[in-house]
Image 1 (cartoon, rainbow, N blue to C red):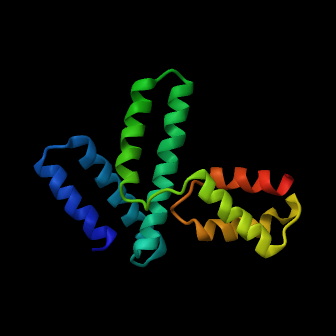
Image 2 (cartoon, rainbow, N blue to C red):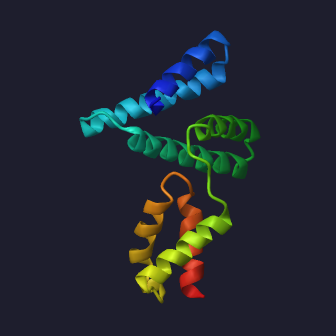
Length: 148
């Protein structure tokens, strides 16, 4: 079952179960997917949809952090609840140790030795961890391993 079909199915279930928050989040996601398809003038496959979901999760994470910083815990909680619903559609996230192993492997394969090689390492690591690791974590680990 494709992600689009899964989203449609989950939306119907949320409607029947009267889960307003979950329903709203799924509708927002479907709308974001549709907008991306209109922008690209083509239907998105599962990889494209994963990209939209990843972006939505990142937006929710940043918004929640901003709300927490400005003493708005009720809004931060709402963003985190939406983020939890969205993460159900992403593949299982890699642990920091697993990401560190991927980064180390890519650095060894490319023979990277300094921070100047970061532009070569990052795209390779992101391609291998697509949808399974947060870009901030990957960036931090690449910097740490190239500097060390």
